[in-house]
Structures are given as structure tokens and as C-alpha cells.
Image (cartoon, rainbow, N blue to C red; front, side):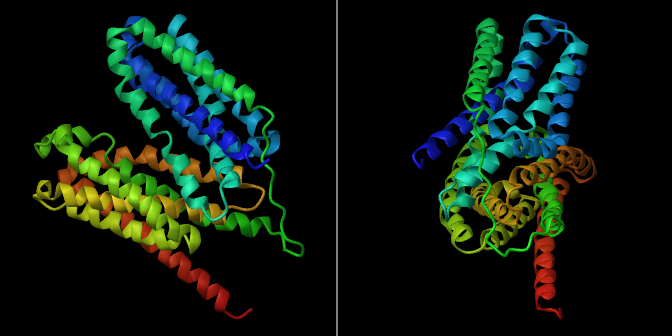
Length: 390
């Protein structure tokens, strides 16, 4: 029934939002604030978080495969249940060994969530709006992550018991939502009669996306560990970024809506390529000495660039993934994206040590430019192969 489709998607997004709120709140805020009182050192907390995120990243491909084999609802259930177990252990029976093992198991169970939600978003999207639907699903967790990072921490300092209870209640609600979706399966569209089936060719096309998937998450991750040192070097505070940030959010929304229509109605590359070019230009301008005078233009450019890029990227992935194997393919692409997020801080720290602000932003500009050139070269080689002799 068509009216059930938005309700199903809303439940999936609610599940994803709750899970991300609890995960971010636990690893970014709750454990760092209350861990010493629970007998968990900073090193142990770091290993717990690292084990979770590494297991999640490495298991995303198999997690997407489980979505296809078990059904979406059944594959999503282990994550919230294992998360509830990890939360209970951290709160009531904290121990380094059990904490690390529980967080790693939680990461393995969590791995099916993102590929499952993205494949559901693609399957349930209104025809002609797939790229924008995927972008909305991508961005739906932003308030959850901000809540976990910026609200849970201060509350944990002033009302620790109530905050722990709130995290447990949110995770319990996530488990209930997952149970309500346990019978959900996504129907795979049937290929038109006479269409040749080539699994090797389909997965070759997915493999061609992986370098771009790695690079496009690597660039923003360069700033992960050097953001506050960078602001100190530039004599800027978070308050100084409020107006440019508001402008960036405004232009981002306009970009997703207006340029995203081009990705849906035409070809996603019509949004992807301008987005990559704008981001490369933005990072290049930020590398110039005296960039603090350009905060407002940089805010506008980064919003336009990211809006166009994310919408175009989601549309391109959706068009490339093989029919009937979207969840496994989403998992593979997102696993490579996770590796970009993991390696970005390492390279960003090295660039900061070598060349400071200029080094970090110049490397970011080079990364976005390389992604743009890679896409152009890949598209040119495909056109040459299509027009060449049989």
C-alpha cells in the first residue's frame, strides 16, 4: 500500500536517529565524562570506541549482504539489542575486557543499519527524486550527532543518573522500533525481459566508485583533529563561525533542492562535478593567508559545494548499484567511505605539523580536485569504450 511507504521510512529514520544519538552520546560524551568514576581510563575508553567503529566499518559490506539474505528488519535487529547490552555493561558492570568486547560486537551488529536504511531510501523514494531522498536520509542524523556530542556531555556533568537513564531509554526505544520492523523486507525490482545478467560487470561498476568514495570522505576528515588548533592559530572562536555557518546551511539547503533536481531529472554528474569543483576552490581559498576576511564567501561556497556534491554522489551511487544487490553494494561503498574518515585525521595531523593551516587546506583542495579528475577520466574512458570497435 503506497501510504505505508512514508510511514515505513519514517520509522527507519527514527531508528537510525535514536541509534546515532546513543552511540555519539556514549563514546563522545558519557564515557569520557563519567568513565574515570566507573574505573575506565581514557585509554580503555579509546579502545572501546575504536573497536566499535572499526568493527562497524569492516562489517558494512557483510551487513548489507545480510539485509538481502535475512530481510531488512531481521538484519537491523541485532544492532539495537547489542547496543543495549553494551550500554548496560558500561553503566552497571564496567570492566575493560567486557566493555571492549561488547562495543566490538555492537559495531558488528550496527553495520547493517546504514546500508539497510540507504537501500530502503532508494527503494521507497518517489520516482524522480531518488538523489534528494538519499541526501535527506544521509543528513537526518545530523541533529542526533550534535545532540550526542554537545548536549549529553554537559548533562552528564550535572545530572549523571538522569542522563544515563535517558540514554538507556533511547536505546530501549530503538530496540522496540527494530522489533516492530522485524518482518520488513525490500522487494527487488525485476529486470526487464531479455536483459543480459552480468554480475561481474555490475560489480566492476561498483568497484569504479570506490576510489571516489574513499577520497570524498578523506577531505573533510582532514579537519577532525586539528579544528580547534586551527581556530586558535587563526584567532577565531566558535562564535565567529556562527554567521558563516548559518550562511553555509542556507546555501546548502538551496543547493540540495535546486541543483539536486538536476541530479534527479538529468544525470547526477551534473550536480557532482560542480560540487567537487566548488569544494576544491573553497579549500584552495581557505589555504590563502588572510582567509579570515573571506569567512562569509567561504561559508556560501562550502554550502553550495557540499549540497551539490552530496546530492550528485548519492544519485550516482544509486544509478550504479546492481539491481537486487543494493544493500550489499551500499555496504561496500560505505565501508570504503568509513576508511576515508579513519585515515583523514592521520593525514590532516601530518599536514598540520608540516605546513599548518595552509598545508591542511591545500591538501583538502588537492583531494577534491583529484576526485574531480578521477571522475572525468573514468567517464571519458567509458565513452571511449562505448564508441570503440566491438
